Every structure is written in C-alpha cells, then in structure tokens.
Length: 450
Image 1: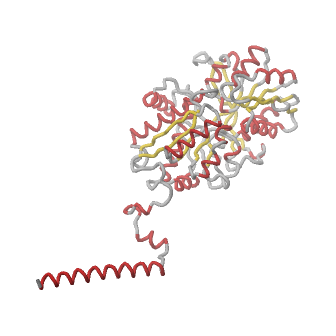
Image 2 (image 1 turned 90 degrees about the vertical axis):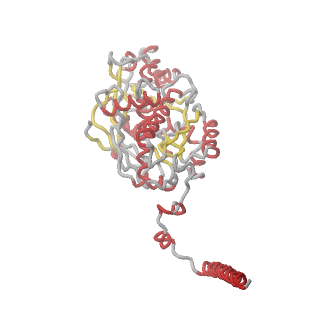
Image 3 (image 1 turned 180 degrees about the vertical axis):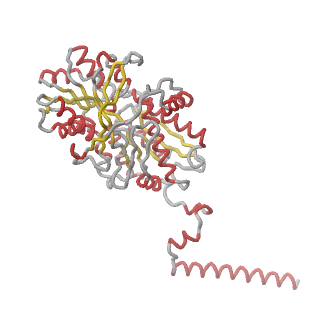
C-alpha cells in the first residue's frame, strides 16, 4: 500500500512537470521565435520531411505526374505524334534509369482538338482533378492563350509551350512560371524578312497567317526583317479550323505578290503550297514557319514536285540522318516504347521536350517542388538535347530557351518516302539573350553552321 502510494505520488509529479514544461514552452514560444536559418541548420533535410518546403502537388516518393494538352484529333491532329514520342522517351528513362531521382515520370495527355474552349476544360481537369505537378509542351497559340493566366494563378509550372508566340516569353517577370521552347515567331519572321530583302528586293511580300498571335507575330517579324526593300501587302488571315487557304493565295497572286510567306500548321501550309504550284502554276518563292517544316507538309503538298525550294528554318536534326547515333537511338526508342515505326521531325521534337524537361528535373534535385523546378530552370547550365542542333538556355530574365536556327529548304530525294527532304543551308542565326519585343535584324548574329 505504501509502495503504491509512493508510485502514485511519483506519477502525479511527472505529469505535473510535463504540463508545466508544455506551458513554459508555449510561453517561451510566444516570446522567442528562433531564426529560420537556425532551424534549417539544426534540422537536416535528409532526415526530416518538414525540411522540403514548397508545393509538391503531383510528386510522390515514386512518381512525378505531369500533363499536357495536345490536338490528338481535329484540324491539327498531325501533331499527335509529338506527345506519343514524348511519352515514349519518358518510358525509356523510367525503365533504363528508374526515372529521375528515383521517381518515374507519368505524362497525362488530354486531347483539346486545337479548340480553345476545350483547352480550358482539359487543363482545368489536369490541374484540379488529376493534380499534375506541371504542364509540359501545351500546343497551340490560341489554345494556350486561354489557360496561361489560369496556370500562373494556380502556381503550376508551364514548361516549353509548343508555340513561338511572343506572349509567353516577352516578360518573364509577368509570367515567371512560363517557359518557351520553339524559336519565337518574331525572330523567325525577321530572319525570313532579311533573307527576302537580300534575295528578292524590289517586289511585294504576301503573308498568310492564322488569325491570332501566331500569324500576327510572324507578320510583324517579316515586316521588321524586310524593312523598305520590298512592299509588304496586308496580312491575309484564316481561322484555325479552315481546311485550306486557297482564296488567300488567290488574292495575293492577284495583288502582285512576288514572295509568299505562310504562318500555318500542317493543314493550311501544305494546302497553300499545293494550290500555288499545282492549281495556279505559280512558281513564287514560298517560306513557311518552323512548325510546318516537317515531312508531313511535304507529303500533303503533293511531294517534292510541289514542295521543292520551299524554305523554312529549323533547330533539330533529321530522321533521315541515320548515321547519327542519336537518330539511331531515337528510332529505337519510339519503336520500342511508343510503337512508332517512322521517325520524323515531329517525333524528334517530342523527344526534345522530354530531354529538356528531364534535364531540369535533375537540376532541381530530389527535394522536388514547383518553386524549386522553376528556380532550377532559371539557373541551369546551357543544355543541348541529343537530337538538337543548338543548345538552349534560360535565366531569371530570359525564358525564351531556343534562340538559334538555321535556314532549311526542301530538296528532291527519291530515296525519301515523300520524295524530298529538308536540308539546312548557309550560316545559322543566333539571338541569345535578346528578348523578342523590340528585336531587329541587328540583334541577330550569324554563326557558322554546322
């Protein structure tokens, strides 16, 4: 009995001391808050999950969930091969390297049919229901324009938007979570305009452009590059769902255009080439944006017979360069992991997206957060993917990652399935570190190629 009483007294004392300690601790906590750096120094990140601060939505110990909106069907369905190749490369890395820092990458692909209202719907689903970590390679100027502000409000990293519109990269301070990947349309247009001014001076330039920032930016770039060397005719516009641009080509021919520039996807761009060459017999020099500089455009234009001599620009290697180990590996990867039997410019672009994103994930390290991956992108060393012709780089003040191209023209090649191929020529062009807002030809440097 005495022993029980002593034990009860001891337990009561311990309880009272514990209560007092908690009360004192709360009192002290009100009075003194240790500096954050002291807490960080005393709490190793590797031992405490609380050390990982920031938004980890879409990240688990074993997986990184990302999303994209792509036109798998609709007027730009030709681009469906891009996400297929991106997924194939992620699957390859997941199998051969275990993903990045022990996490496998899963890409959710939503079909927006190149329709802005549908883009809003599918991107909201990716963010709010699927809880993706980031959006990668969202395709289309008019489509992505509808979700860019929403993604910023939600704090979702918006990597490598698959359009060269000025809007994504003109002001990184205003869009800190958004990063470009394609050569911007202003620079592209300036380079076309400069070439046209030096080779076709004294004539008239006719420009056909999609009725959004895609066409408007390209038109503005051409005007800056041409200067007063040629007359610039008013921009002929079309809507994204339009099956062709025949009437626009007709009007420019009637207006006396001596050079034709087309800013369109591989639906209207080849239609313009085919109509000018096959229907009108019009041997006008034709330039098309890099988004249509692929084998599909040649095929839809009627093959090399119609497309020969068409000029564009590019920043990727070619699928026909099968002596290149990187192309050999690309062909192997898309076949094994994607079931894609024929490599082309679009599959190469899809892999370049995956390689660039993986590089940034590695730079971000194992403690992955949305804030951390953006910071990693802005501080990473220049990176050149295995299928790229030039390196890309980003910084806090420059989110325009691809800033070098080389002109390319269609040349006949009977060995190629479409009877022709894109072949680079001349020196390359670089505008590293120059934002496109007020860019002129004087801001673009000529560099030897290859």
